[in-house]
Image (cartoon, rainbow over all chains, first blue to last red; front, top):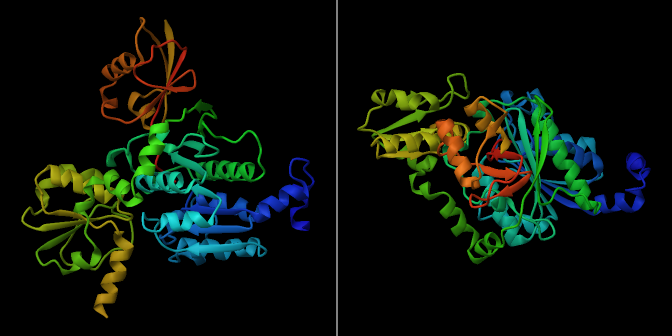
Length: 356
Length: 77
């Protein structure tokens, strides 16, 4: 217990509190900007069982803020790379790496195993999935989200308190959904917000009274202005979510699901064009002959450069920008346009496999 | 009455302001929002929640607070 002597010295924690921390099971979804600092403090605090869900791999542009990784982690799955670093930080805790995407098929199964869920994801689809799965499995969610220099934190679904849908009932449009790789973010900001999330996790475990439930904490890293807004519970939201199977709710959230295409299907198409909507400097580059690159913000202005006779398969890094591009193209009568949401890295992998 | 309107996230970028003072007559929150959108058409179609004196309110409630905050959802992480 020497490791935790500074915790134990606090009257509010003591040996009893430290034991609660050791017995806690926390699932962190997303080991990116928010997940990294959060995981770092949770592992250091001695959370008995830490789960990490992330399907993505470490890229060089992550290193500006995702502090668990270094050059040696490039190309490695984030859940696995994070586990490696954290196990070195604290080998007395159990860490489970889940190197895959959280989906409506695996969320409930995973949530069952943990007491507290930390939302460190970077898109609305995952945030609503976490919200709904936490209602069904009755788990508190420590929520954090960021935009450029601003952050929002709250604890949802805690002791009968409000949930994310009480604050934002409806899924925003893709236009509202651009993530950090699309718009940029000050590196320190997720460090601050993710640390606030770790703080809330510990407050829940230690049964402090002042948990950020029913409140949205808003923080501005430029001005240090902060506000705490009260959120009231909308009982209807809970009954609606509980009435439906999780998969149904998620399909309703994403009505554009039909425009999705899998990598296998995409590769087999004959008269197709792969449209890459990432910025020009983003890697990896792809060895495809029927390929065109137009960054998302230029798509609308360059419609005349796209061959309307082709079946267009749009992709980006994580499937969010491409989803938006598909919407723009379909609105402009490119009716055979599909979103390859698995993204560039998965596509490259599959191409290499097919070559072999 | 005089109000202080606070804009967060992308809304602050659209309006070019983090905060402004507005003088209005008695009205509902929804009417106030229409007035603000009229002033800044870029806000049209944007999703946000409205807080009055640090409490989330809906469009039907009367404006009776000194501070109104417009909070968009953030997705980044």
